[in-house]
Image (cartoon, rainbow, N blue to C red):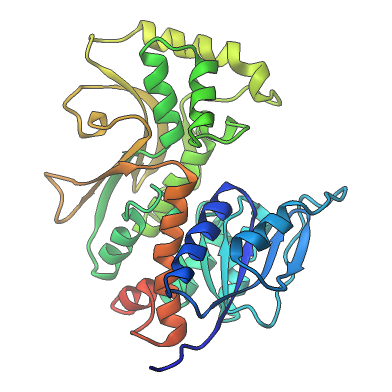
Length: 361
């Protein structure tokens, strides 16, 4: 049997997604899969460490116990020569800023960090340009926890198919909370339940304010080629977060806004949803009452639904639906992209998804 070349990997981030990812990779390696994947280093806001040995989970546990140093929150990982593939499981803008540099240097990047393609416009343009030229970039985990929307839009672009519009329920956390509040649960209780289920972060502001969903919408619009849509996402004023106010202190104001919207329910069966919409001339994210037969209303709990209209799917849109929140789902989406990137590193097939389909354009 041919021995596979060892692939040096750096893991950025040590949170819940990283933990789920490490546990899954350890399980696969015990089964004889991904044995050639070597964890060379871990980095987080506390520092950077060369991994001496042990399982991925053991290395992560040690990294989680590093003492925090004052002023180290924006620490940028120093690239090591043994790195061939970077897994970015962080939410750090300073790390996302390095994505184009890593790609230009020939490293593959697999990411759940939405601040790369969904952040600053120049950075996103550089990433897309490098991806189109064959760089190994995996972004399945950034939208819909791996529902496949990014890959489908990439294929449409490569085939010259015009995308007409994208709409969806992109925040599994906000979808879950709105469902519970619509059923009569108080906002604080709904958020606490989402946190207990692993659907929401300890600080849920990014989700509840729509900022996280706005990044996802920008990713979809950019990959779809909506160059004229602008970078600004119009966010519903009822979702706007009080400036400088932390989550616990804003519960009353946000709950009151939702109460007003719920009081205006147009019919007993109408469903309240936070709907993201992208068209070539603009992006928006707003609370909407949906008819129960609307495809965007055909979802439960934290499920995401994404509708793509294109030349092929003009009258009847492509519908992608499935759970869209949680560290386990995000970790599995990272594994999908990781496997594609490993094949590229090993030269097993004609590159990863980006190299194969963008080469057709």
